[in-house]
Every structure is written in C-alpha cells, then in structure tokens.
Length: 223
Image 1 (cartoon, helix red, strand yellow):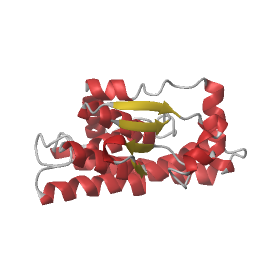
Image 2 (image 1 turned 90 degrees about the vertical axis):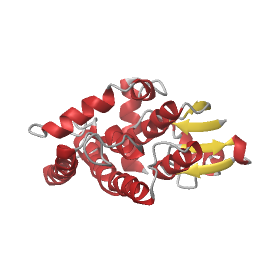
Image 3 (image 1 turned 90 degrees about the horizontal axis):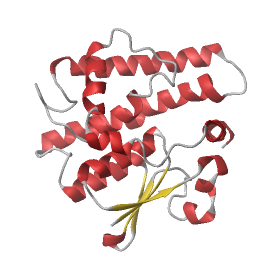
C-alpha cells in the first residue's frame, strides 16, 4: 500500500495519474498548500525540501520517496510497467522524464509565477519564460511528428515520460503559452487525455477554491 501526500498541481498529477495507470492501491492525503502544510514539521520529516508530492511505501518498511520524477521511477520499477523493457528503452524514458524535470516543468512553473502571481508585472520575465515554455513544447511537437508517444517509433509505447510531460504540457493556457501550429503536440495531448486513468488522476485530490489556488500560487514567490 502506498501513502501519497500531494496537491492538485502538475507535479502532483504525475503521481495520481501514474498510480491510476498502474492500479496500485494507495491512500491519498491531500496537502493544503495555501495553509503551508508542506512546511510543517511532520511533512519536513519526509521531505526536508517542503514540496509535494511525497510517497511512503508501507510494503517496504515505510520507505519514503520525494521528488516527483524519483517517485515515478520507483513506482514504475515496483510495478514493472511503463518504464520500458530494454536498457535502451529505459534510457529513452528517463531522458524524456529528465527533459520535463529539468526543463518543461521549471520553465512553465516560472511562467506561471510571473504571469499569474508576481506582485509586479515584469514583461521581460513573462516573455522570457513563456518563450522558453513554447520552445520546449515545440521540441515535444517535433519529436512527436513520427510517433504516437515519446519513446519508440511509429505507435511507440506509452510510458511515465508521457505522463510527466503531459501533466505540465496540458496546462499551457494557464502559463499564457500558445500552442498554435503545434499540431503533433495537440494530437498527443488529446490522445493522452482520453486515457481513463489520466482523466481520473487529474481530478485527485479535489481542486481547491479559486482563492486557495491564488494563495498557493503566492507561496511560490514567498518561500
């Protein structure tokens, strides 16, 4: 059994979607970012960085994993699914997971901060992060021109790489980024969106009220 401590954010959805895809039993613990629950001592004992998501594997002596990408790798390895079969495939999955962790997520996250939450309007910062977000989405678009999913050729194979990148990419409008002209990306976004596990996963935990969303966003620039 997995204990998952999370919130309805792109990084949080990566794990709820994955758990739904893997059909692993888990208990969901919603963390209220607007009230800084992720900074409380009991949470910091699991993740000293004070960020969601965090998981605890009760079947492995309460082993704790933090950082969404690390959690995805752990769960996919545990289930033996969505990680690729060969060393080459596993490397490709990991490469595209790192692309999201090191590029797409941070750049879109900063676009969100300056476009949605920062107390001052700084056009240069907004433009810089929106442009970089668009560039990274274009990288995905071009890679998807000859494949259905990020790993493999032709139809390819759905993996944690798709889940991780989709959970950020599908929020492009919130970041103020246009995907006009990125037709391969658009098709992939819809293809992944149609998966029942994805539809379930992005509803977990229940989304907070708009005021709480704004409060949680402000925490990004205060901490």
